[in-house]
Image 1 (tube, rainbow, N blue to C red):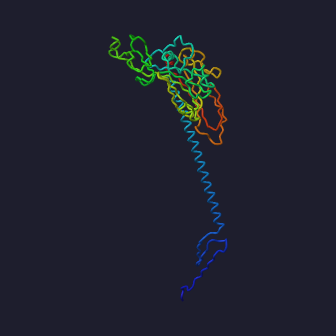
Image 2: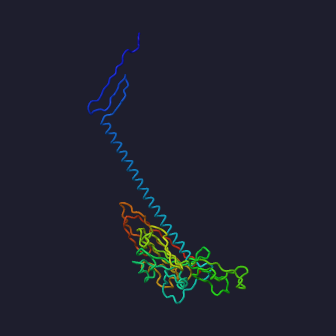
Image 3: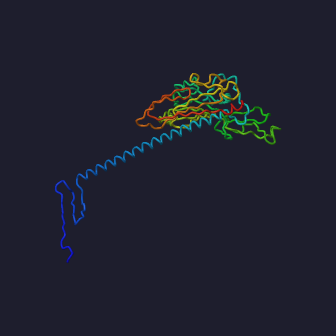
Length: 364
C-alpha cells in the first residue's frame, strides 16, 4: 500500500475591484493572510488616530500641569524669601554694635526724617528711629508729604519700611557711612557716625589690654558700616537706560543710602504688595501693648515710633506668568489693607510676627 500523496490542492483567491488588496493562499489546512481589506485599513488608521490624539492630550496636560507647578513653586519660594529677608532686617533694626544705650532723638527733630537724605546730620539724627514706615499712597510723591521722592516706579498703595542699623560684618567701608563705638570713658563721644572715605578719621578706642589708661595707648575701636535701608515694591524688575520700566513684574526692592548717593537693588520678583502692623510699647517694658489698625495704619507720633517693638509683616506674592482661563476673584486681607487685584495671576499671602530685638532688649 502506497501512502505517499501524489497530488495537492491549492486554491487561490484574488480580490476584484475595491473589495480586497491581498490574497489568501490555502495549503492543506493552513492559510496565510497576505493583505487586508480597505475597511480594515480604515479602522486601523482610525484607532491609531485616537491613540495619537490621546497621547497628545496627555502630553499637553502633563506639560500644562508641570508649568503650573513650576509657577507655584517659584511663587512660594519668592514669597517665603521676601518674608525671611524683611524679618531678618527687622530683627537687626537698632543694632549699633556694642553701644549699650540707644541714641536719643534730638529735640530739633519734630517730624519723621527724610529717609532718602544723604546728609550726615540727618543720618545721625535719625538713629533714634530704628524703624520708620509709611502706609501706602497713590504715588511716592504723596508718601508723607513727599519725603520718599527717591522711590522710582513705586507700586501704588503698597507700604514702605525704613530700617536703620549697623552691619553685622565688622570692617570699614569707604562706600558707606560708618559707625565706631567707644569702649573707653575718656573718649570725647560714645560713638561716631561719619561718611568719611578715610578710616583714620575714626579715633575712638576699645577697652582691651592695656586698657583705657592712658587713652593714647588704647587700641582703636572697630569700625562698622552704618546702614539706612528702604524697602518698597516697584512696578517693574528692570529698567531701561532712561530709568523707565523695562517690564511689568512687581518686585521688592531695597534702597541703600550712602554718602555718594543712593543705590537701588532688586531683591525678589513677583512681590505685589507689602503691608505692616506696628506693635507699640506704651508701658516701656519691651512688649507691645497695642497694634496699629486699618484706621491708624502707622504710629501717629515720634514717641510712638520710638516705642515700636514688634512688626507684623504681610507679603502678597504672585506668579510671574498668567494662567490661561483663570481669574483671581479673591480679596486678600494684608493687615490694615484689603487688596483685590484680580487678573489671571495666581497669588498667595504670607505673614510673620517679628520682634525688634535691640530696642525691646534694652527695655527688659
